[in-house]
Amino acid sequence: MRAILTITAAAIVFAAIAATADPPAKGPASQPTSRPKIRISFQTTRLTKPLKPDGTVDYAAALNARYGKGVTPENNAAVKIAEAFGPKFFDESVREELIKKLGVKFAEKEKYFHGLADLYEELGYEVLEALYEKPWRSADHPKVAKWLAENKAPLDKIAKASRLPKWFMPSVDSDPLRAPVRLAGLRDVSRAFSVRATLALGEGRLDDALADIQAVRRLGRLVSRDMGIIPRLVATHVLGIADHTTQSLATAGRLSAKQARAILKGRPPLPATFSMVECVNVHDRYETIKLFSNLANDPAKTKGLLDMITSVHAMLGDEGDKEWRSFASATLLDQKRLAGVDWNEVLRLVNNDIDMTVVAMSFRTYAERLAAYKKLHAKDRGEAAGAKATWRELPPAPSEAEWKKSIDAQWVIGACESLFALDFPGWDTEKIPMMARAQILADRVQVNADLTTLAVALAGYRAAEGEYPAKLSALAPGWLKKIPQDFFSVKGFIYKRTAKGYLLYSVGRNARDDDGKDGFASGDIVVRVPPAPTTRPAKR
Image 1: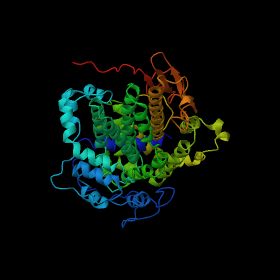
Image 2: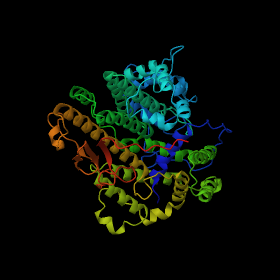
Image 3: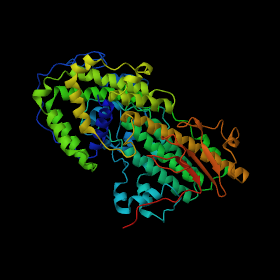
Image 4: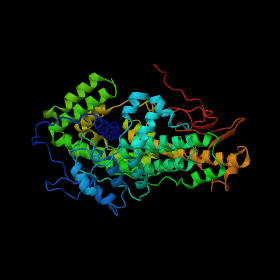
């Protein structure tokens, strides 16, 4: 059986990407089908209550009860951030419902945050990206300064909201082809704070710069508590921008010892909830069950889903195997064959695969997780017979008889996986379920945060002592309570003092020391002084 988690992740990613395009046209009302009814049970629907009036599981109500405890409009940062973005923060199909559930109040004639799209088109990507890395002044980029001035009120409102203790975005029964919340706007907000911070540095307003950098980090920490994997992936981006800007500040050689201590004091650790395991086990499991339930019960939604998949592949420029995708689409629209599929068996297989992946993701060390993913991959390909006696951590694979019974169920899953397949650079040859890759991204954010903390402490040490330390151990206990370890190697970060600065790095997700050669697909995660020259696209 193919890795079902690929379908889970890709379905959610596709919906998020599709939300940036024009909403799909509304088709004719769905007609009831005569397909076998899905049983309400732990093995199939996982939840058995609460139920809707039609007898199906109310997953939205279950999620809101789980994640909405103790949340009020006054302590929920999502409320104030939505008010800073305006009504368009919510998709129109669920706007009124979310406004009511959250208790959002939009003021008349409010100046809402507006993003960077026009500036990117006018000035170019490389110009704006460079502003995260070095101080600048208003006269250098007057159009960017004007954009920041126009967004001052909503940015200040978001900065204040980032100090609130809760983040809760209610789950709603929305169209599976539309994202209910425009979370991509949070990336532009984090860029705005970072660019405003480097502007403040250029104008000598260090306290303002530190305040904006800390606001980005607080925002990322809040969103990392969301129930869904897409918001948490957005949080990895937000936190990455905050740490990138902080590293630029720390490696520029301008921080005083007092300023470095102020930054360290304002860097609380990432929350323990910044894990993708619960997302996979709860929210995204439910989304997967809902996806297959739609395929089982609503032929019209099947057609809409296939149309969305085609449009997103086109948006991404992903050619892929068009012939196979066309065949898979045709088979999923074969109502006669689908009518004979045991959808209860489909859901049983889906839940079994998610259960095994959650166990594999839950191992404490990176090496243990990789070993578990490799065993999962072998099981999917029927290669694990020889290792069966040692595979005690995960549930046993279904028996041969069970496999024969579920041939149609596997056919449906395989066709879906073929359609959702996306080529992600750097993961091509890896035996890691897509949802588990999201956890590795979160791990990378944590490692980068530790490197950033070390970079700030090193900058403070240099300001106080006149030179960088010979070893990282010199930073504790004077600057740090303890020296963090590299999660990917379970050893200390690699640090080399040089004639002009230092080289500091993690071995990265390939768990191999590449001598400070950085790169996402294969390579280390690096901080260096002086910073390496940035390679940018050539101007045309």
